[in-house]
Image (cartoon, rainbow, N blue to C red; front, side, top):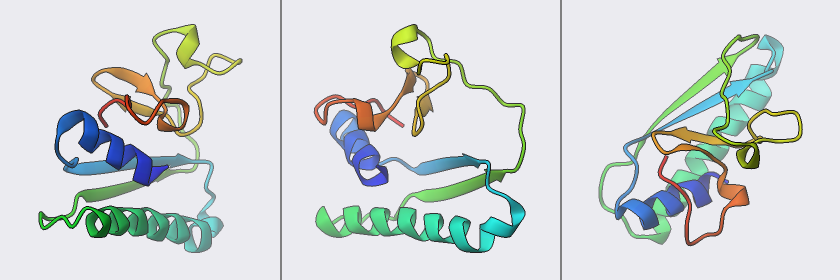
Length: 114
């Protein structure tokens, strides 16, 4: 998912993003050591793969990984088409200045910028 999102950003914007902010809720403190670190390594691995596959010589993007145990932050889709059946954003959504999207639900030729 990260590889597709970063690759899609490049296709739409003719360049790599400068940063990714990964927001993870529901990860308990005891799970961070295993699950959280594994996810961070997977994200970094996808970034390394893109830089290697595209033979990029620019500095890699910054990664911010935010873990929230409980939160009251809500992201609201702009339309029912961008929401799941409960009205929430789909898992894996991307929030940006163009709205809310999900690279897993978009065609490779048209993902939005992250």
